[in-house]
Amino acid sequence: MTKNDKQYWETKTLAEMTADEWEFLCDGCGICCLQKIEDQDTGNTTISSVSCLHLDIKSCQCKIYCNRAFINSDCIKLTPDKLEQITWLPETCAYRMIHEKKQLEWWHPLISGSPGTVHSSGISIRNKAVSGEHVHTDDIENYLL
Ligand code: SF4
Ligand code: SF4
Image 1 (cartoon, rainbow, N blue to C red):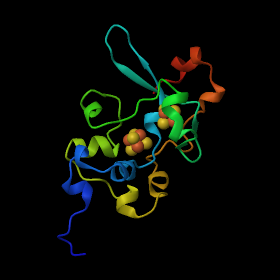
Image 2: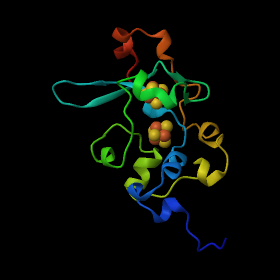
Image 3: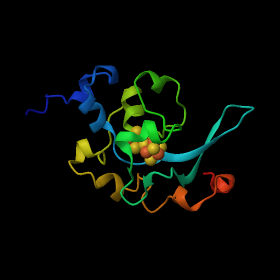
Image 4: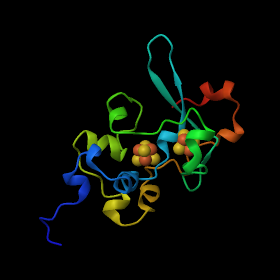
């Protein structure tokens, strides 16, 4: 490969990506799986440090990924169309970055070649989140970031 060869995430839009390409774009940070509270008056969403019940907070992987739509009706499956409406994805999210025509960072697994760099760089929620298994829904407002 020459330095002029471009990778798929540099040449394709999100809508043009295959299912596999779309999945590989996720950096595995787990930030989108933190629970959120929406202000009914303003519509603003605030993220907490409490994860979804179904997130393994060590690996930052969903424990029910293939069945998440059936098991967790609150789980939002990202699609290219939804990128326009969702306001709570972190600035580091690869889908958001590509949507905003930014370059992926060095720690993204597609750039580094290792799934570990999203954790070692401190981007992911590893060692920062509290599992939703241990926090009552009514207490989440005490964990807002
Ligand atoms: S915030 Fe974006 S990159 Fe991180 S886990 Fe969620 S979808 Fe993947
Ligand atoms: S069900 Fe899985 S993918 Fe959906 S929010 Fe929970 S941990 Fe994340």
